[in-house]
Structures are given as C-alpha cells and as structure tokens.
Length: 309
Image 1: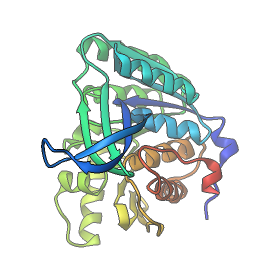
Image 2: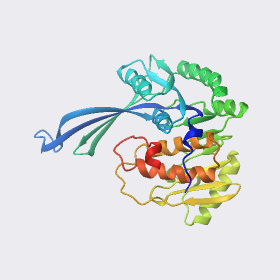
Image 3: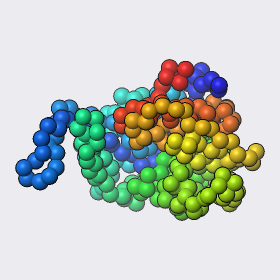
Image 4: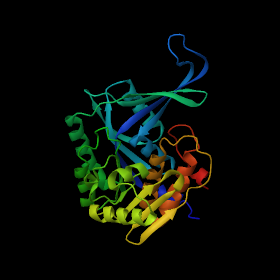
C-alpha cells in the first residue's frame, strides 16, 4: 500500500483556479405534508455553509497539508463574503476577484432527516473584466507554485482555459484538469485530465468492453497531448491511461452516503502527491482511497492524512 508522503506534501505549493462556489445546507425535520401542495414541510433546525467547486478542491489540498492559493471569481454579495471567510478559516491564500455584475455561484440544499429534498442554484457567468483580472493574477502566481489545478464546473470562470494551460506549460508546471462537457480540445496540453465515467462517455461515446475503452482513452490522450488520463468510474473504481498502458484500481468496498465533491477530493490528492514527486501509478491508489473515504460523508467534505492512515 502506498504511504501518503505527508512531510513532502507540506513543502508543496498548489495553485487552484476555477469555478468557486458556496454550498449551503439547510437541515431540518419533516413531520407533515403541506396543505397547500403535496410537498413535505421542513422545519429548519440549523444552517451550514461549505466551500464548493474549485474552492472545495483547494480546501481538500489544504486539509492534506499542502500550501494552497485559490484564484477565482465571486460576487460582491453575502455569499461571496462567506466564501472569503471559509477560505481564510481553511488556511488557504486567496486571490478572488469581486464581480460587481454577477452573483456568487450558490447551491442551496434543503435536507430532512439527512436526505436531500431540494436543491436551488443561483448562478451567472462572470464578466470579461473579472476574467481578465483573474488571468493576470494567475500568470503572476504560477512561477511560485509547484502544480496548477484547473477545476472546471462550466460556470464560466475557465472560459479562456487554453491561455491558462499555455501559461503553466511555459513555466514548466504540471497542469491537472477536472473537465466538463465534451469539448475536450479546450484542455489540449494539460498534464493530467480526470473525467468521470459519464463525462468520458460524452467525449468518446459509450464503450462495450475494457479493450474498447482503452483504445478510445489512449487515442484521446495522445490527441490532446496528455501525460495521463484518469477515468473515475464510481463503484467500478478508476482507470489510469499513460504511455505505460492501463492501470485499473478497484473501488474500496464501503457504504456510499453522498458522492458530491468526491471528484474534488480525488483531484486534490493527485495534485499534492504529484507535487511531492510520486508517480501517477502511486498517486492513483491514494486518490482512490481518499475518494472512498469522502463518499461516506455528508455533502462536500475533506479527507485528512490521519484518515488515510
């Protein structure tokens, strides 16, 4: 079993750029149905805010011991101020652009007896002025960091991701990308890409056999100039494709409580151990172990070095 290199991770600087979100949870009890409509009435008992999207990747990397800088866009609103508070509390350095036009991306979930009943999203794309300011900051920050992580949730922050990848490559920094959508040519030149099973199917079509998946994955990897392609496959584990071939890591058996944010945890683990010098073949089992731990928790959560051991 690969040992998590905590001492080496603590010396690494990780730059996370992407769609910053606030995950808001309202917890309550349900004991009746509304007389106005056939819906449950939730009596709210407490509220909890957590970092989401790229901010959750940064939070996970910081929880693993790395030094982390988060770059993104938030609105000039209550949710944006709350994001800044949570980022500071997590020990993350931040360069967040205040967008006076668009609000902070907010996902509000209502839960009754630990079961999600409703999710309400508030989101708009950031302005071009905000993206321009953010790109300038990223260019200045890249040389001071060991690895660049681009977390794409298709909210618009990485609208010009090609320029960010080029800047990282010019500085000889590894670039890890969590993609969204099926236009993968946007990610050409990245070091590693981590599509989930559905995202991979959208990009290359459905496959019937493992051999067919390997052929399509390797073709995509070569076409995009990637060093590695990791397909996360939920209960099927995760499969790594490199020049050396295919490496599959089976999922660790355990009860799945909530899969939200698991991809963020996997991406953060890959970033910190790559920065610490581990090869992908050792990084993937650690990422698989971390993902298996976090899906047993409610909502967007983190994994600590103590839990890994």
